[in-house]
Length: 230
Ligand SMILES: [Zn+2]
Image (spheres, rainbow, N blue to C red):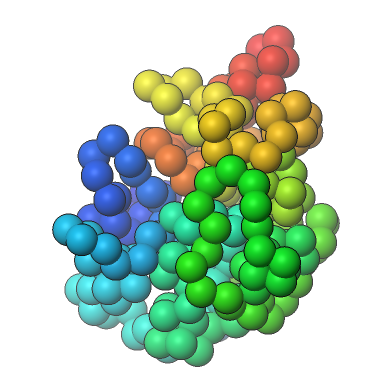
């Protein structure tokens, strides 16, 4: 079991390759004995079992009933985040949460034409979020619309624990946080502005989707990524 922080599980074995890590997270909800899944991994492909099978295996190994996952929260539309969404939503019966802009692209209405892989299947998001919305997941999450990587990219912040679930707003490259990589990003200047805003939050841990999570001192690295003086 990889419980990287109390109540925060990183799903083992979900990285498609050692140089392409994907932090799919299971968050234990403070209330109700339920769980929240944050992003869903790539779909099954040659040589890779796919997010749904790997999440299912993790849950079976750790006695987490699939039906106790009541919410699936998505940071953005890219396939490495939404590839397992349809199947996992069907298997768990969870409600799907995403920003209202990403919700339209995840439903392929209209299809996304920016950089990065779009979802393969059209999926209906149940709860369309806007900036500042709060979720009962984990120990309380606040949606921070952080556009740039994609138009509706959203990071989720837990004020009670000072954890920022950053999605692809930042990447960890060799222990340093950097603004999301240009080649996969809709607007780099917008991504930079979003990171600047996130860096204004009191943050201890930054758990972004790619690269090792920063469990301590994350705020300083985030400020450095934003170009703030630390
Ligand atoms: Zn992405």
